[in-house]
Length: 289
Length: 283
Image (cartoon, rainbow over all chains, first blue to last red):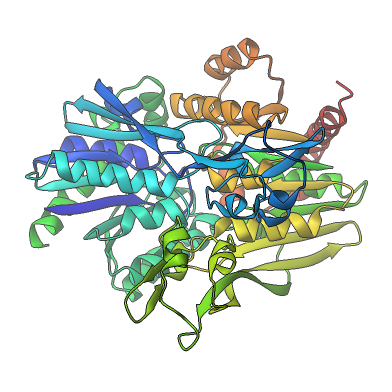
């Protein structure tokens, strides 16, 4: 089995559109994961049929029993996350700040604090024409996105042990959910665009992927918006021996297709043509992995 | 006064709005720009300077093996799985540690020492007499994003007007950035993605009780998808930025459009006035 993630560092460079295109164009038997659990959009493009969803339990959360609380404030002093606030002469936990460490339970002289399970999100199982899709959603105000990504990958592996390809739509950034996404994968497709911001984000992402021994491929989206920066990016990729799968031109048809919920690859524009070519190149590379 | 520019979805133009807003407002008053997108900080690209850097550390445990009883109390307590106690040694996984400090409390033998671990840095630039840029930068490979965001917010908390560039998403980093802010301006785009991620962010901000206003970026005049949602949820739309190839090009090259073009300076100045009025509750 090969696990491939589409990642970018900077948000909004075209990860999801590219993942959806790969999902439709790559011939292998596959399972799809949307690991951008804060803002899961892959299902908006693939229009899958939802099968069912499971509750996702993140870290337990502290709860203070107001009847037992004596108002001493030791828990507030001990909480490094600022998750305990005073209301009247009692203390209460601000759930969205509580990381679930349990330190407050150690210091309470009245045994008024307990750790309670909490539902912090959902895991959704769906069926799309390109293959089964797993995606997550977080309960508003919940964290634990890295853990949720881990669970999505675990579930995909358990339910679809025999598929050839696991294709993951990654989160932006280089923090917890991204590290959860790229741990143990074989290859990452880095999607960037020719802007100073994306260039800076890309170089941080490359450093990270390298330390996780992930084989990297590069795609430059909207490359003709700034040809100078595109050239710099391609030169950097060459120096670092990162294979450039292709470049996608700015094409208003991409926006129109996305708005209308139509896969970009069904349009006849130059972006669609480039994406077909990139998927073919990726397929050739995957056969070598 | 802390005003956060956020989006849910990445790449909708948070940094464009924060940078231009900070710049035009600083022509009239003292402004602090704070980059809390510490995984991928980009505000500095629009304000090149040589910053003063301050390392940010969190406290983690270091095991003093000769004092350790290998009783297992710390490993049993740590809910993050950062400590595993074996028969004759303790394994510590720093990347899993949330620096809660609980292990120090449960150790009966004072066998855990508090040591600092570097997680990133905060860079400060005094750009002009009235504009300061404070940027958080997470060390590559580290996951303690919120510790660096917390350090940025702590540094700017007493400044009169702070414009904060938020990280994408709606989980821990976003919550750390936006908690207790006076106003959160969500920058979105008129696509189904933009709408979906806007609605997720609005739900989180409702839980946090932070007021919301909206800016539509890449508008081509057909913004009904966002306008409908905003009117349904009584969210003010403060500005529309058109979808424009030339604008995109300038922005990509690292130009600050409000510094280059008087018309944009005026538009962001108007946006600034509206935002300040909303934050003060004058609207």
